[in-house]
Length: 69
Image 1 (spheres, rainbow, N blue to C red):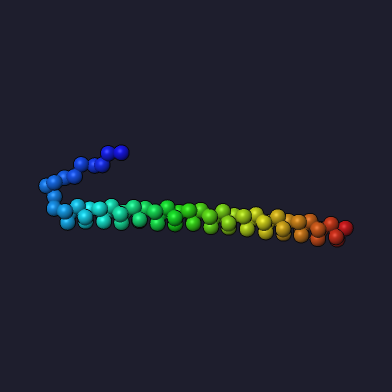
Image 2: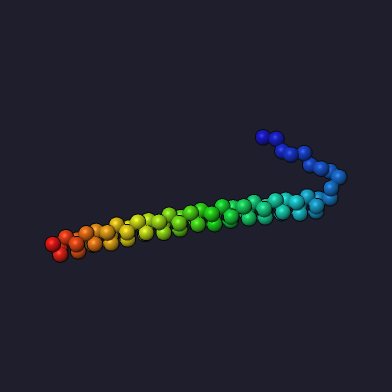
């Protein structure tokens, strides 16, 4: 794997700052991806709960109607 050529016209301090900025950007991207994943998990969890209670109450309603006959 080849390393990128180093621009020797820049001062080493400038290169370190660029590397720090790149690392910060990567960390921000990772945090955003984690947040998106958490949002997706929460929405699936909410949908699952909604379906569970819909089925539960439907069954209870059917049982109640059947009991009255």
